[in-house]
Image (tube, rainbow, N blue to C red; front, side, top):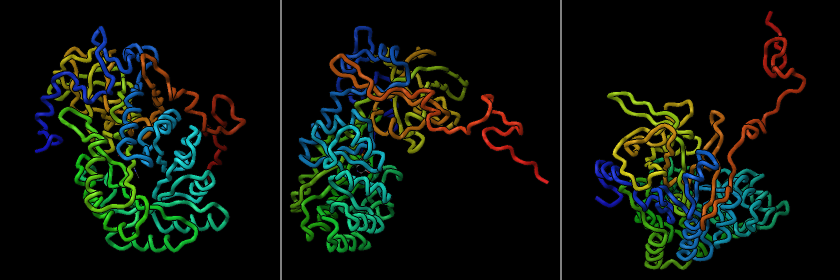
Length: 462
Ligand SMILES: *Cc1c(COP(=O)(O)O)cnc(C)c1O
């Protein structure tokens, strides 16, 4: 049994105590009234001022992890922006020396709007449209990671039509198991991503791209999955990649992202530095000559943030369980619903309180599946109106969420040095109808003579 595989019973026992500090942002501290401080800011006051739900990001923690990635992998290491992307985050990652991975035209747009130079961007995606590729080429994106043959056709046509010849990496699937959730495994043979090494597609792609005058092939890329704890999975991938890439003698080899993070009591993950050191050692032992690079997302941002909610209802069902309903839900954290991911909880007003009580933390969406934490440890006196927080919500929360039920998407705040600044404001009711188009000419009551709403009266049938 390893550290990451503590028995479930042990994990649950660990939950009776106070929230472990390694699950909190680096700067988390206990304030004079026992409350959570992050970046020197009282999180309970912040919640009173800005309302809940609220994502609170420790800015120094974000910067520290970015620096660790650059120190570990050097020039060329990229932040996988999909984990958490807004203008300030793009700017922060860029200012710390990272390149940015973008996977769609939308992510490309945000990175460019943040002022990140196009040559610091890498365009990913398993189904890039002609428009997306054209936007990237027009902007002068540093690298395109080619995923499939149809995309090769699209790039070649755009270059024939006058776009500058791009530098490309070829995404391959090394056929290794990442030992993570099926939906976040991407490096196995049965994958929608990349060119398969085992069946010869990767070699065929390299042969075609290598012979093309319309692209400049600079490297090989693989990404085996996300929330991967086992460094040996990355090492197996590296062995396949080095064996595949050696005869090509290309300057770059990217191992992708995917390093796991601890979400709950009893979990520990390798640091970015440890992950990088093991990869570098394996690469050296295998005689890799190319520059080894990586694209961490989650491991840079996940534990930098906590989400703060307010408990709006507590429902005790004797002999069954107790539900605590909060003012967010899968709209701000879809991971429990998507992957069965586990989270933990604590009360920001009493950071060091024991958590002997178990409740199921649910959201406010109209779905029984809207569960945030199945067996949440909470203080014995948790009551309606209390703040309740989930740690390690900095990755794939805000970016993967939705506004289902027209629940307003929460704001994100960066805190540092005793100061807080909102980097994404809360969604407003006006935002909710900003894209809706209403047929003109109807009375404000919205009822046309036939009783149909917002459409032409339908003639009754014969
Ligand atoms: C999602 C993704 C990453 C980042 O994954 P994390 O698990 O967040 O580190 C890196 N590269 C590619 C190609 C990805 O799709």
